[in-house]
Image (cartoon, rainbow, N blue to C red; front, side, top):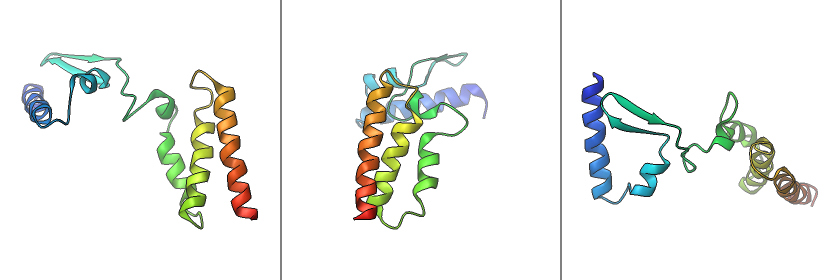
Length: 118
């Protein structure tokens, strides 16, 4: 498929999604790229829902690391707590308040320890 065909197919897809309530102007502005014309792509607008920068920094996305790490957990509740600890620790330096994220990780870690030792 050449770029012109891709561009036209993408525009039809966006139109269908917009007409059916799946895409609104807020979503379009949050998209990581926008096909402005068949010859131009606008980059730089962060998609804070699907690929926020604080989860996608580095060689792997945080979700991939977390899913792999919690797989052997003996229960879903322990896996969730473990995943929360990892989530906050993996992004600690990538957001505006590392102390807050460290405290959140500690809160989940303390709860995980209580459940495991309980």
